[in-house]
Image (tube, rainbow, N blue to C red; front, side):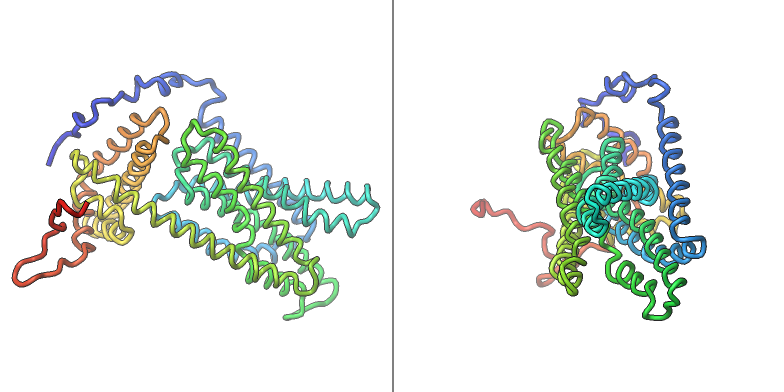
Amino acid sequence: MATSPPYATYSTYTPYETHPPYAAHRHPHWWQRAWVRYGALVTLLALSGLVILALVRKETGTEGFLVGLGLAVLPVPLLVAAFRWLDRVAPGPWRNLVFAFAWGACAAALIAIVANSFATRWIATATADPASADTLGATVIAPVVEESAKAAAVLLVFLFRRRDFAGIVDGVVIAGVTATGFAFTENILYLGTAFGTDQLTGGSGIASVTAATFFVRIVMSPFAHPLFTVLTGIGFGIAALSADRQRLRRVLLPLSGLLLAMGLHALWNGSASFGPYGFFAVYGMFMVPAFGLLTWLAIWTRQRELRTVREELPAYAAAGWLTPAEPYALGSLRARRLAREYAGHHLGRPAARAVAQYEAYATALAFLRHRGRRGRAGADFVVREQELLHELWNRREVARPALDHAARMTAPPVPVYGWAPAPPYPAYNPYQY
């Protein structure tokens, strides 16, 4: 085993300290420092959370707020786990998910409540028709305001955490978690208000307004808000796969996704005005097929990511950075899991974490090379490639044995012809091409 990284393979390597994009920002201004940005963001979200808490509690009352909170939290772990499962190939950092959920639950919800209330009151005053104002606010104003507010979180991650935003799955996950946070706050408001109505009217049991609201929002449509915003996330995800020079494409794709999200949201909100069966018609004809189609697209994209890993990493194995078995193991979720379990069983939890980090860096390296071969890599391609290779090299002593073991355990059985094993690769036929 080599004891030093094979630098000779990469003669274009530029040291991190002397690369122009990084050298220019070695001494940033105070407002460009990471702790300043993080502090401002945390302060903004905290203030938004306090204000939205006060508004919802004022609307529902303390008891209604607690009931709404207890019921609204039920689908959150399932939805977050589903998006995290989808992100298993190249999992993004938890801080991005925490930010997305907090933005949806606090900032986006506050923007929606204030803007929707103001717009509805203005329309009611201008038209002197409160009923029409409520309908117009729900079908036109709310979809535009809410989807724009949620899309802001996706835009911020896309702009400022660009390395964590590599494709469609990343867009789906960030958008879905943001919408999950938004729906969480909205469900507290609706369920708490319904509980207050039952307290006034004496409704109880299955006939109560709370039970009906819970069934519609938590049981039948917990995926509604994530489904809308995922369309925006897909637009950003496709834009992330585009080259930097394709600026028009990188602007139009997110906008197209946002418009689709607004349209589906408006159709969903307007279903109640389509007659007594309008809700069920929209649910069956649009929501369920859209949910199935987007689920299929997300899973297909995840399989495509695994195929990219298997196709791109052999070049690094040939250069000596990886063992021959690693591209196969890293392109299989089962092999990855076995490698982490092997390292954890023999060397402890720190080793399992090191293997997980190795897998994440190797996946990022495969995606980077894939973009580079298609002419979509940024100006820092060489520096980023070397950073990832260094991270892999520093963890090789722990990760390589675990991945080699996983590759042996998951390799398909070799058929036997007579007494001799079949060759590992088909024999070369000069006439087959």
